[in-house]
Image 1 (cartoon, rainbow, N blue to C red):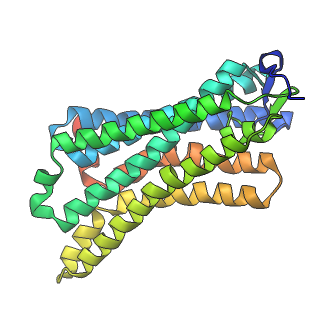
Image 2 (image 1 turned 135 degrees about the horizontal axis):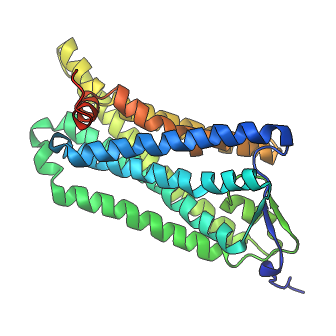
Length: 309
C-alpha cells in the first residue's frame, strides 16, 4: 500500500550545525557578523560598478551579478538560521522549506554559471585582446547574463516541483541549517528514484558543464600566456585572472570537499558544518578577493568615497 501524502500534517525541523545550547550565542554572533560583512562587501562592489563609468565593462557586469547572487544565496539560509537560534526554535513551515530549496538551488547554480561566463570573458580578453570589445559586445553580455538567470531558475523550478512529489511519514528532522534538496530526498518515505535521476543528471549537466568550460578556458589562457615573449607581458596577462581564479578555486574546492566528505562520513551535522564554507565563507570572501587584487575595483571604491590614493 502506497504511503499517504500527509506532508502538511507533520513538522519540519532544521537541526542546525550544533545542538549544544552553550554555543548558540557564539554562533548567533558569528553568523550575524558573517552575514553583515557579506551583504555590505557585495553591495559595495555592486554600487561601485553601477556608479563608476570606468567599470561599465563586461567583466564588471558579470562581477556585479555574481555579487548580487552571493547576497541572495546567503540571504536564503542565514536569516532563518539566526531567527531559529534567537527564538530557540528549529521549526520551519513546509512552504518555507520548499521556498528555501528553490532559492538555494537558483543562486547556487547561478554562481556556477557566472564563474564560467567570467572565465570565458578572461579567455577573450587574453587570447583576442584586439577584438575584445567586438566579441564581448553589450548584446552578447546581456544574453549571457540572461541565459544564466533563466537556466538557473528553470532548473530550480524543476527540482522544486519534483520535491513536491515527496511524501513524509513522520516529523522531518533535517540535519542542516537550510532545507537542502538532498536531505529531503533522503528523509522521504515515498519512492525517490525519479528525484535521484533528475538530481544526478542536473548535477552532471549544470555542474560539470560550467566546470569543464572553466578548465577549457584556463587551458587556452595558459597556452596564450606561454606564447608571450616578455616576462612583463606574461605577468600582466596572468594578473588579470588572479582574482577570478582565486574565487573559482575557493568555490569548487569547498563545494567538492563538502560532497566528497559527505559520501565518506555518516555524520550529517559534520557535513552541515562543512557546508558553511561554500554557502557562507566563500560569498563573504569574494568581495575582498576582488577588491584586494583588482586596481580598478580599488579605484572605483576610492572614487565612490572620494578617498585620495
